[in-house]
Length: 152
Image (cartoon, rainbow, N blue to C red; front, side):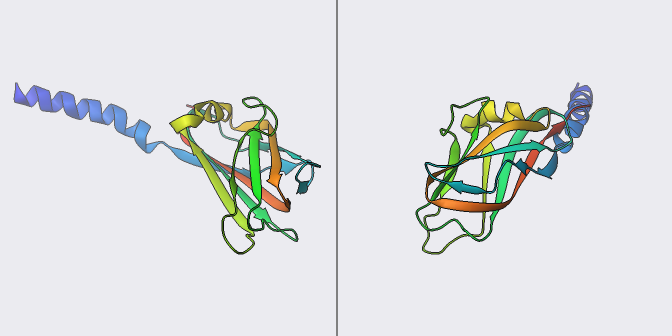
């Protein structure tokens, strides 16, 4: 009895382990409609394709690099996937420090953002809006990293 229970447990682990170990991260630079974003005046639209399809997505990270006009203290940047949220209402971050930032990363995971993760199952999104809640920035690059289980 114990031997068959152990054998069954080993069999189940062997079935599950490849799926757990199969998680991968694919990334790509997004194409931006413009690089300068000013609160109340301009937004940038981003298109990205990480060239990987997923059966499930665990996390999506947005890595921004700023140049010339950095993210200054108190400034807020928002990222809005327009297929999920109305314009100017996405997630983002604020520079709460005392010095300007040249890079910043924000990641979304399943807790509260399952709808955003679902957008990236096909590895791409064509309607990402970048806006400023306050201030202005110049975006040198936006890299999107998608972590999930590749579609077989």
